[in-house]
Image (cartoon, rainbow, N blue to C red):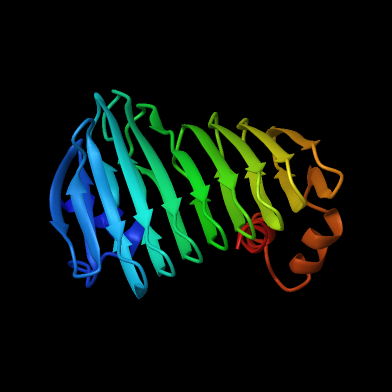
Length: 305
């Protein structure tokens, strides 16, 4: 691995000269390091570039890291990773990604992750996306996440993108079974001419299933963000979609939450709020000695925390 990769790994996946648990590191379209454990097996896919990760039933308290890095231009990296989580398992999955450019050529990473959670299993899934380097090339990260939740299972997804990514299309779809739950929290910051699109589609097919989609975003400069969510209630279930966005400078945000209730006991709610930072918040912080720019940065940081 080159030094740029190591710095990206520290930023997106808590890399510290290695990982203690299972991991696979991808650099510029190739796997460069990998380790399985007794309970978590990582193998190559047979029909596409990518991995099959299998977590044994009953596994508790373990972590698997699968970061991917692109460190120069003219790379369009695509990877397909499948996760099979055994019954009753409880694990942390970290899938950070970074694109670094010092030249004018574009670069892109497209990670397609499929999750199959067994009965009564629990997964915390963290993904951090960053763009770095001084080159004018377009840095693109386009994650696709497909989730299937068996009875009584739960997936908590925490998605973070706080700068440097010029274009991103983030697609997440899920099928939620009986008494299963899905929680997604995303935080996005765009600036300059950057563009970000979020697209959630969740089908609630099981009795007493639930979903909570929470999006926090800040659009600065002349950047543009679009938020789309669709929750489909096909059974007695609860669903909630919440989008809060702050505009600064000439930033633009579109929000279009959609609900489809196909069962009389489907209880679905959506909320969307878009606006600028309140002037009284800036004034209050300035009385504490901060400049206007420092006050705004403080408010944004707290909002995206």
